[in-house]
Structure formats: structure tokens, C-alpha cells
Length: 106
Image (tube, rainbow, N blue to C red; front, side, top):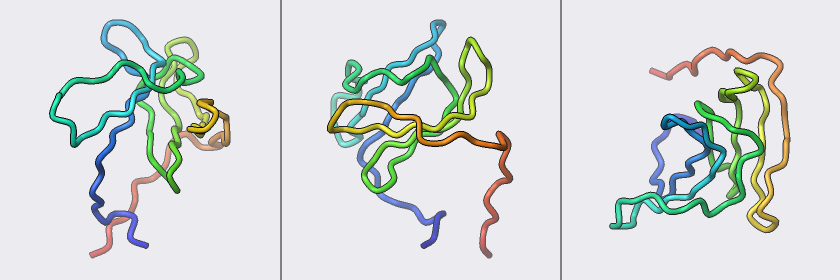
């Protein structure tokens, strides 16, 4: 599997953020929608107020890791979102916050 291969994505998951206020809201945006606007939060809130985290889909599930929490600073927590229960569950904890960048094949 080539981890750097491009993929066609049609959904964007937005978790938390900062716009003068800190947020824990979660939204899924359909990139094929013509409205161009963000919907109201349509998933349960993330377990903490967060920004600068990494969010991805793996095997049809939302996974979110790391980020910055206004109260505690950098976080090393990873959570999975379950669409059936509308719940976030802590699944992992990093032992090393800083990772080396992926090496690109030539």
C-alpha cells in the first residue's frame, strides 16, 4: 500500500478549532455540495476543546489524534468516533508526541 498515493475524497471532517473562541464541535462537510457553507455540528462534540489535531478516515471510521487543548496544552490522546452510537472513545495514547516525517520514495 502506498501511503502517499492520492485519493479522491468527498467528505471533510472538521473537529474543534479556534476563531477567537475554542471549540469541540464536529462536522462532516460534503465537498461535492454546492452550498459552500459549513453545516451545524452534526456529530457529538469531541471529548475536549481542541485545535491543531489530525483527523482521518480508516476503514470507514473517524480517527482523531493529538492536537492542542487550551487548558492542558499538547495532548497525546487518540479517539475513534462510532457513527452507530454517536460516541467518541479513547483508543490510544502516544508515548512520543513528536514523529519524524514520512520518507518519500524516489
